Length: 382
Image (cartoon, rainbow, N blue to C red; front, side, top):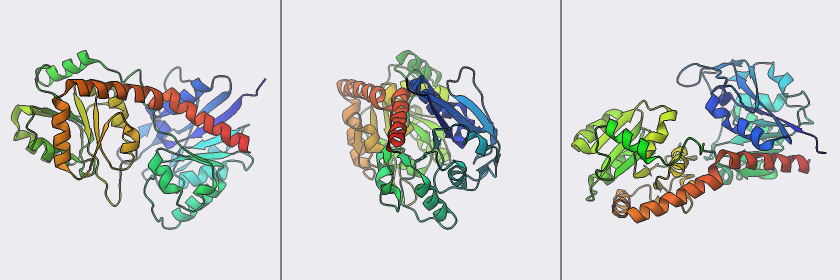
Protein backbone atom coordinates (compact mmCIF):
# COMPACT_ATOMS: atom_id res chain seq x y z
CA UNK A 1 0.00 0.00 0.00
CA UNK A 2 1.41 3.37 -1.07
CA UNK A 3 2.08 5.98 1.57
CA UNK A 4 0.17 9.24 1.25
CA UNK A 5 2.48 11.99 0.03
CA UNK A 6 2.34 15.36 1.76
CA UNK A 7 2.35 18.39 -0.52
CA UNK A 8 2.63 21.98 0.75
CA UNK A 9 1.82 24.72 -1.76
CA UNK A 10 2.65 28.34 -0.90
CA UNK A 11 1.33 31.50 -2.56
CA UNK A 12 0.45 35.05 -1.60
CA UNK A 13 -2.43 34.78 -4.09
CA UNK A 14 -4.06 32.17 -1.85
CA UNK A 15 -5.31 35.05 0.30
CA UNK A 16 -8.21 35.08 -2.21
CA UNK A 17 -10.39 31.96 -2.00
CA UNK A 18 -10.87 31.81 -5.78
CA UNK A 19 -7.11 31.50 -6.26
CA UNK A 20 -7.00 28.38 -4.06
CA UNK A 21 -8.88 26.40 -6.70
CA UNK A 22 -5.60 24.82 -7.79
CA UNK A 23 -4.76 23.65 -4.25
CA UNK A 24 -8.27 22.37 -3.61
CA UNK A 25 -8.47 20.60 -6.95
CA UNK A 26 -5.11 18.91 -6.36
CA UNK A 27 -6.49 17.65 -3.05
CA UNK A 28 -9.62 16.30 -4.75
CA UNK A 29 -7.81 14.72 -7.68
CA UNK A 30 -5.05 13.39 -5.44
CA UNK A 31 -7.52 11.47 -3.29
CA UNK A 32 -5.75 9.24 -0.80
CA UNK A 33 -2.41 9.54 -2.65
CA UNK A 34 -1.80 13.19 -1.80
CA UNK A 35 -2.40 15.24 1.34
CA UNK A 36 -2.42 18.92 0.30
CA UNK A 37 -1.85 21.95 2.50
CA UNK A 38 -2.16 25.51 1.17
CA UNK A 39 -0.17 28.26 2.91
CA UNK A 40 -1.72 31.72 2.58
CA UNK A 41 -1.03 35.14 4.13
CA UNK A 42 -3.45 36.32 6.82
CA UNK A 43 -3.63 39.61 4.98
CA UNK A 44 -2.01 41.09 1.90
CA UNK A 45 -2.08 44.63 0.59
CA UNK A 46 -0.98 44.17 -2.99
CA UNK A 47 -1.20 46.86 -5.67
CA UNK A 48 -4.81 47.97 -5.24
CA UNK A 49 -6.21 47.37 -1.75
CA UNK A 50 -5.76 45.41 1.45
CA UNK A 51 -7.12 41.86 1.46
CA UNK A 52 -7.88 39.63 4.42
CA UNK A 53 -7.69 35.87 4.14
CA UNK A 54 -10.96 34.46 2.85
CA UNK A 55 -11.88 31.06 4.27
CA UNK A 56 -14.58 28.93 2.73
CA UNK A 57 -16.40 25.92 4.10
CA UNK A 58 -15.63 22.48 2.72
CA UNK A 59 -12.28 23.26 1.10
CA UNK A 60 -10.55 20.04 0.08
CA UNK A 61 -7.04 21.28 0.91
CA UNK A 62 -5.95 22.11 4.44
CA UNK A 63 -5.51 25.89 4.80
CA UNK A 64 -2.84 27.38 7.06
CA UNK A 65 -2.24 31.11 7.48
CA UNK A 66 0.99 33.00 8.11
CA UNK A 67 1.89 36.65 8.38
CA UNK A 68 3.16 38.68 5.41
CA UNK A 69 5.37 41.77 5.64
CA UNK A 70 5.97 44.59 3.11
CA UNK A 71 3.09 43.29 1.00
CA UNK A 72 2.66 46.56 -0.89
CA UNK A 73 5.49 45.29 -3.10
CA UNK A 74 5.29 41.91 -4.87
CA UNK A 75 9.08 41.95 -5.22
CA UNK A 76 9.95 42.77 -1.62
CA UNK A 77 7.28 41.12 0.54
CA UNK A 78 8.15 38.14 2.73
CA UNK A 79 6.16 35.66 4.80
CA UNK A 80 6.41 35.49 8.58
CA UNK A 81 9.01 33.22 10.22
CA UNK A 82 6.27 30.73 11.17
CA UNK A 83 6.41 29.57 7.53
CA UNK A 84 9.47 27.45 8.42
CA UNK A 85 7.47 25.03 10.58
CA UNK A 86 4.87 24.47 7.84
CA UNK A 87 7.58 23.55 5.34
CA UNK A 88 9.35 21.01 7.54
CA UNK A 89 6.68 18.84 9.19
CA UNK A 90 6.93 15.57 7.30
CA UNK A 91 6.61 17.28 3.94
CA UNK A 92 7.37 15.29 0.76
CA UNK A 93 7.37 18.20 -1.71
CA UNK A 94 7.01 21.99 -1.54
CA UNK A 95 5.37 23.92 -4.37
CA UNK A 96 6.09 27.65 -4.48
CA UNK A 97 3.70 29.76 -6.53
CA UNK A 98 6.05 32.74 -6.23
CA UNK A 99 8.36 34.00 -8.95
CA UNK A 100 11.96 32.84 -8.41
CA UNK A 101 13.35 36.38 -8.55
CA UNK A 102 11.23 37.86 -5.72
CA UNK A 103 12.18 37.75 -2.06
CA UNK A 104 9.25 35.53 -1.10
CA UNK A 105 10.41 32.97 -3.64
CA UNK A 106 13.88 33.10 -2.10
CA UNK A 107 12.40 32.74 1.38
CA UNK A 108 10.48 29.58 0.45
CA UNK A 109 13.63 28.12 -1.11
CA UNK A 110 15.71 28.90 1.97
CA UNK A 111 13.17 27.53 4.46
CA UNK A 112 12.44 24.31 2.58
CA UNK A 113 14.65 21.56 4.10
CA UNK A 114 17.37 20.37 1.72
CA UNK A 115 15.98 16.83 1.76
CA UNK A 116 12.60 18.09 0.46
CA UNK A 117 12.22 18.73 -3.30
CA UNK A 118 11.13 22.26 -4.23
CA UNK A 119 9.15 23.05 -7.39
CA UNK A 120 8.23 26.62 -8.33
CA UNK A 121 5.72 28.05 -10.80
CA UNK A 122 6.48 31.06 -12.99
CA UNK A 123 4.62 33.22 -15.51
CA UNK A 124 7.59 35.26 -16.79
CA UNK A 125 7.51 35.13 -20.59
CA UNK A 126 9.98 37.97 -21.21
CA UNK A 127 13.73 37.57 -20.96
CA UNK A 128 14.68 40.21 -18.41
CA UNK A 129 17.87 41.29 -16.71
CA UNK A 130 17.20 41.72 -13.01
CA UNK A 131 19.34 44.02 -10.87
CA UNK A 132 20.83 42.72 -7.61
CA UNK A 133 19.53 41.29 -5.36
CA UNK A 134 16.83 39.90 -7.66
CA UNK A 135 19.30 38.41 -10.16
CA UNK A 136 21.05 36.56 -7.32
CA UNK A 137 17.70 35.51 -5.90
CA UNK A 138 16.64 33.96 -9.21
CA UNK A 139 19.94 32.10 -9.57
CA UNK A 140 19.73 30.64 -6.06
CA UNK A 141 16.10 29.53 -6.38
CA UNK A 142 16.66 27.88 -9.76
CA UNK A 143 19.73 26.02 -8.47
CA UNK A 144 17.85 24.94 -5.34
CA UNK A 145 14.77 23.73 -7.23
CA UNK A 146 14.18 20.12 -8.21
CA UNK A 147 11.94 21.31 -11.06
CA UNK A 148 9.83 24.21 -12.29
CA UNK A 149 6.50 24.76 -13.99
CA UNK A 150 5.64 27.42 -16.56
CA UNK A 151 2.17 28.90 -16.90
CA UNK A 152 2.39 28.49 -20.67
CA UNK A 153 4.51 27.34 -23.59
CA UNK A 154 6.01 30.80 -24.27
CA UNK A 155 7.05 31.06 -20.62
CA UNK A 156 8.88 27.75 -20.81
CA UNK A 157 10.48 28.57 -24.17
CA UNK A 158 11.75 31.90 -22.86
CA UNK A 159 13.12 30.57 -19.58
CA UNK A 160 14.89 27.58 -21.08
CA UNK A 161 17.33 30.11 -22.54
CA UNK A 162 18.20 31.51 -19.11
CA UNK A 163 21.07 30.10 -17.03
CA UNK A 164 20.17 27.05 -14.96
CA UNK A 165 16.60 26.49 -16.15
CA UNK A 166 17.36 23.87 -18.80
CA UNK A 167 19.22 21.75 -16.23
CA UNK A 168 16.02 21.21 -14.23
CA UNK A 169 12.92 19.18 -15.17
CA UNK A 170 10.16 21.49 -16.35
CA UNK A 171 6.60 21.37 -17.61
CA UNK A 172 4.29 23.91 -19.26
CA UNK A 173 0.89 23.70 -17.56
CA UNK A 174 -1.86 26.27 -18.21
CA UNK A 175 -4.17 27.92 -15.74
CA UNK A 176 -7.56 26.32 -15.25
CA UNK A 177 -11.20 27.26 -15.77
CA UNK A 178 -14.19 26.37 -13.59
CA UNK A 179 -16.37 24.47 -16.04
CA UNK A 180 -19.25 24.34 -13.56
CA UNK A 181 -19.40 28.17 -13.45
CA UNK A 182 -18.54 28.91 -17.07
CA UNK A 183 -20.92 27.10 -19.40
CA UNK A 184 -23.30 27.95 -22.24
CA UNK A 185 -26.39 29.71 -20.92
CA UNK A 186 -28.09 31.70 -23.64
CA UNK A 187 -31.01 32.61 -21.39
CA UNK A 188 -28.77 34.42 -18.90
CA UNK A 189 -27.00 36.13 -21.79
CA UNK A 190 -30.32 37.34 -23.20
CA UNK A 191 -31.28 38.69 -19.77
CA UNK A 192 -27.95 40.54 -19.65
CA UNK A 193 -28.69 42.12 -23.04
CA UNK A 194 -32.15 43.21 -21.89
CA UNK A 195 -30.61 44.84 -18.81
CA UNK A 196 -28.42 46.83 -21.19
CA UNK A 197 -31.49 47.98 -23.09
CA UNK A 198 -30.79 45.78 -26.10
CA UNK A 199 -33.05 43.41 -28.02
CA UNK A 200 -31.63 39.88 -27.56
CA UNK A 201 -32.45 39.18 -31.21
CA UNK A 202 -30.68 42.18 -32.67
CA UNK A 203 -27.37 42.19 -34.62
CA UNK A 204 -24.55 39.93 -33.38
CA UNK A 205 -22.59 41.16 -30.37
CA UNK A 206 -18.82 41.55 -30.62
CA UNK A 207 -17.44 41.26 -27.09
CA UNK A 208 -14.34 42.34 -25.20
CA UNK A 209 -13.50 41.31 -21.63
CA UNK A 210 -10.55 42.60 -19.64
CA UNK A 211 -8.57 45.65 -18.70
CA UNK A 212 -9.09 48.88 -20.63
CA UNK A 213 -5.40 49.45 -21.41
CA UNK A 214 -3.53 49.97 -24.71
CA UNK A 215 -1.63 46.69 -24.56
CA UNK A 216 -4.92 44.77 -24.57
CA UNK A 217 -5.58 46.10 -28.08
CA UNK A 218 -8.65 48.29 -27.57
CA UNK A 219 -7.51 50.90 -30.14
CA UNK A 220 -7.11 48.16 -32.77
CA UNK A 221 -10.53 46.68 -32.03
CA UNK A 222 -12.21 50.09 -32.21
CA UNK A 223 -10.53 50.77 -35.57
CA UNK A 224 -11.61 47.37 -36.90
CA UNK A 225 -15.21 48.00 -35.85
CA UNK A 226 -15.18 51.44 -37.46
CA UNK A 227 -14.65 49.84 -40.87
CA UNK A 228 -16.87 46.78 -40.35
CA UNK A 229 -19.79 46.88 -42.81
CA UNK A 230 -21.62 43.82 -41.44
CA UNK A 231 -24.30 44.76 -38.84
CA UNK A 232 -22.81 44.59 -35.35
CA UNK A 233 -23.10 45.62 -31.73
CA UNK A 234 -20.16 45.82 -29.34
CA UNK A 235 -20.02 45.04 -25.62
CA UNK A 236 -16.93 46.07 -23.63
CA UNK A 237 -16.71 44.61 -20.11
CA UNK A 238 -13.91 45.59 -17.76
CA UNK A 239 -12.28 48.78 -16.57
CA UNK A 240 -9.12 50.82 -16.70
CA UNK A 241 -7.50 54.08 -17.83
CA UNK A 242 -8.88 53.93 -21.40
CA UNK A 243 -12.47 54.02 -20.19
CA UNK A 244 -13.02 57.70 -20.96
CA UNK A 245 -11.64 57.36 -24.49
CA UNK A 246 -13.65 54.19 -25.03
CA UNK A 247 -16.85 55.89 -23.97
CA UNK A 248 -16.07 58.81 -26.26
CA UNK A 249 -15.67 56.43 -29.18
CA UNK A 250 -18.84 54.58 -28.16
CA UNK A 251 -20.87 57.79 -28.25
CA UNK A 252 -20.14 58.10 -31.98
CA UNK A 253 -21.88 54.77 -32.59
CA UNK A 254 -25.06 55.53 -30.67
CA UNK A 255 -27.00 52.50 -29.49
CA UNK A 256 -24.58 50.00 -31.01
CA UNK A 257 -22.04 50.06 -28.15
CA UNK A 258 -22.22 49.36 -24.42
CA UNK A 259 -19.37 49.85 -21.94
CA UNK A 260 -19.91 47.97 -18.67
CA UNK A 261 -17.62 48.32 -15.65
CA UNK A 262 -17.63 46.87 -12.14
CA UNK A 263 -18.66 43.34 -13.13
CA UNK A 264 -17.46 40.89 -10.43
CA UNK A 265 -15.88 37.63 -11.51
CA UNK A 266 -19.06 35.76 -10.56
CA UNK A 267 -20.93 37.90 -13.10
CA UNK A 268 -18.55 37.25 -15.98
CA UNK A 269 -20.36 34.11 -17.28
CA UNK A 270 -23.54 36.15 -17.89
CA UNK A 271 -21.58 38.78 -19.79
CA UNK A 272 -19.81 36.17 -21.91
CA UNK A 273 -23.10 34.46 -22.74
CA UNK A 274 -24.37 37.79 -24.06
CA UNK A 275 -21.60 37.80 -26.71
CA UNK A 276 -21.64 36.15 -30.13
CA UNK A 277 -17.85 36.41 -30.44
CA UNK A 278 -15.07 37.44 -28.04
CA UNK A 279 -12.11 39.49 -29.26
CA UNK A 280 -8.71 39.45 -27.53
CA UNK A 281 -6.51 41.74 -29.66
CA UNK A 282 -3.55 41.80 -27.23
CA UNK A 283 -0.53 43.84 -28.34
CA UNK A 284 3.10 42.93 -27.63
CA UNK A 285 5.19 45.74 -26.12
CA UNK A 286 8.86 45.83 -25.06
CA UNK A 287 7.73 45.23 -21.46
CA UNK A 288 4.70 42.96 -21.89
CA UNK A 289 3.14 40.22 -23.97
CA UNK A 290 0.09 38.11 -23.19
CA UNK A 291 0.96 35.42 -20.64
CA UNK A 292 -2.17 33.31 -20.89
CA UNK A 293 -5.50 35.01 -21.51
CA UNK A 294 -7.96 33.80 -18.89
CA UNK A 295 -10.84 35.39 -20.82
CA UNK A 296 -10.05 33.06 -23.74
CA UNK A 297 -10.64 29.82 -21.84
CA UNK A 298 -13.63 31.28 -19.99
CA UNK A 299 -15.17 32.12 -23.37
CA UNK A 300 -14.35 28.61 -24.61
CA UNK A 301 -16.14 27.13 -21.61
CA UNK A 302 -19.20 29.29 -22.32
CA UNK A 303 -19.22 28.21 -25.95
CA UNK A 304 -18.33 31.67 -27.28
CA UNK A 305 -16.22 31.77 -30.48
CA UNK A 306 -12.88 33.53 -29.92
CA UNK A 307 -10.64 35.73 -32.05
CA UNK A 308 -7.19 36.37 -30.57
CA UNK A 309 -4.03 38.09 -31.68
CA UNK A 310 -0.68 36.40 -32.23
CA UNK A 311 0.74 38.00 -29.08
CA UNK A 312 2.58 35.85 -26.54
CA UNK A 313 0.68 32.83 -25.29
CA UNK A 314 -2.58 33.54 -27.15
CA UNK A 315 -1.93 31.18 -30.12
CA UNK A 316 -1.00 28.35 -27.73
CA UNK A 317 -4.12 28.95 -25.65
CA UNK A 318 -6.41 29.05 -28.69
CA UNK A 319 -4.92 26.10 -30.57
CA UNK A 320 -7.28 25.14 -33.40
CA UNK A 321 -10.36 26.15 -31.41
CA UNK A 322 -10.15 29.89 -32.15
CA UNK A 323 -8.98 32.26 -34.87
CA UNK A 324 -5.46 33.73 -34.51
CA UNK A 325 -5.05 37.11 -36.23
CA UNK A 326 -2.12 39.53 -36.70
CA UNK A 327 -1.86 41.83 -33.70
CA UNK A 328 -1.02 44.84 -35.90
CA UNK A 329 -3.66 44.59 -38.66
CA UNK A 330 -7.07 46.21 -38.08
CA UNK A 331 -7.99 45.22 -41.64
CA UNK A 332 -7.45 41.52 -40.89
CA UNK A 333 -9.61 41.84 -37.78
CA UNK A 334 -12.39 43.63 -39.63
CA UNK A 335 -12.41 41.00 -42.38
CA UNK A 336 -12.38 38.09 -39.92
CA UNK A 337 -15.21 39.61 -37.91
CA UNK A 338 -17.28 40.15 -41.04
CA UNK A 339 -16.83 36.52 -42.08
CA UNK A 340 -17.69 35.20 -38.62
CA UNK A 341 -20.67 37.47 -37.97
CA UNK A 342 -22.16 36.51 -41.33
CA UNK A 343 -21.83 32.76 -40.66
CA UNK A 344 -23.81 31.30 -37.73
CA UNK A 345 -22.65 27.83 -38.83
CA UNK A 346 -18.98 28.82 -38.48
CA UNK A 347 -19.71 30.32 -35.06
CA UNK A 348 -21.37 27.06 -33.95
CA UNK A 349 -18.35 25.08 -35.16
CA UNK A 350 -15.93 27.26 -33.17
CA UNK A 351 -18.25 27.11 -30.17
CA UNK A 352 -18.11 23.32 -30.13
CA UNK A 353 -14.34 23.27 -30.59
CA UNK A 354 -13.89 25.75 -27.77
CA UNK A 355 -16.01 23.76 -25.34
CA UNK A 356 -14.07 20.59 -26.12
CA UNK A 357 -10.71 22.35 -25.68
CA UNK A 358 -11.80 23.85 -22.37
CA UNK A 359 -12.94 20.47 -21.05
CA UNK A 360 -9.90 18.47 -22.17
CA UNK A 361 -7.08 20.97 -21.56
CA UNK A 362 -8.15 23.72 -19.18
CA UNK A 363 -10.70 22.23 -16.77
CA UNK A 364 -9.33 22.45 -13.22
CA UNK A 365 -9.26 18.67 -12.61
CA UNK A 366 -7.13 18.28 -15.77
CA UNK A 367 -4.76 21.06 -14.68
CA UNK A 368 -4.52 19.66 -11.14
CA UNK A 369 -3.74 16.18 -12.41
CA UNK A 370 -0.97 17.60 -14.63
CA UNK A 371 0.57 19.25 -11.54
CA UNK A 372 0.45 16.06 -9.49
CA UNK A 373 1.87 14.01 -12.36
CA UNK A 374 4.83 16.39 -12.59
CA UNK A 375 5.36 16.32 -8.83
CA UNK A 376 5.38 12.52 -9.00
CA UNK A 377 7.94 12.64 -11.79
CA UNK A 378 10.16 14.93 -9.72
CA UNK A 379 9.94 12.67 -6.69
CA UNK A 380 10.73 9.56 -8.71
CA UNK A 381 13.77 11.27 -10.24
CA UNK A 382 15.00 11.91 -6.71
